[in-house]
Image 1 (tube, rainbow, N blue to C red):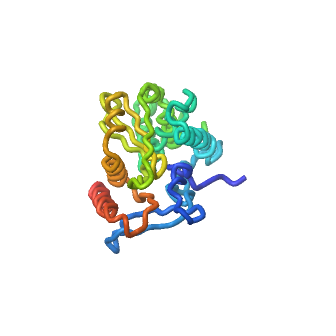
Image 2: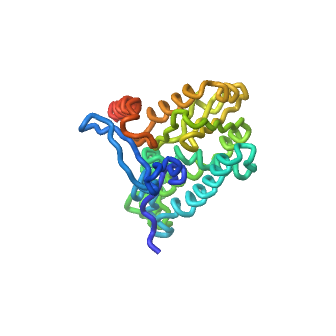
Image 3: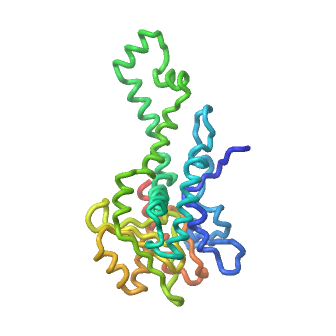
Length: 294
């Protein structure tokens, strides 16, 4: 069987609820066209978005090249998506501890496997190699054994273990972080479902909105589950109560603006092109931020 080369950093099941009404499985991703200087959109199936070729491909020839994508993130996405479905149908109280844990793993993976983050992990491999090659004890040992090349290269050839792959495996440890997992397990969870006629929630290609900084105090995590359902996670009951009591338009506005301003490129919406003027302003602002940062 051929290895999978298209690796998703946002599971398609999280994008599916934004399928257009009569579109037969098509979602619409809005983005800012820097050349035409206006908002534009691309239509396609959920699988066509939020993926990169060889994003998580392992370089070593001793294991499957798509090991991380299929053997690790495959189950993470499948089990996390089932928990998401349960959240939508029964709310947080309908989740078992195992299902909640599965969903937390999915949440943590959303930042861990972003393309920009994956590049950082891969770069760690070269950093590790440089540190090893500069170590005086390692150099002395290499001379003793008459190794006339970089010790790190000799080690990779001898063991078949590549430093880049080892660095890439950090993604799994981040997604399975027990300390953060325990904090989130002990938080209050709430799903707010908005009535028909309310403004629509959008979903960005960086869907998890983290507010309040570190996982201490009154932090708040928001994740749109569908165009009319929003998940809130916080360690404080009063934060959840405020989330539930704040005016519908205000909550949706803050979630939509926050998502757009941290998007990497796309924001998914079921609204027509003529109804997303607010989004054009935010996507233009976000692109400007990214250009300045680069």
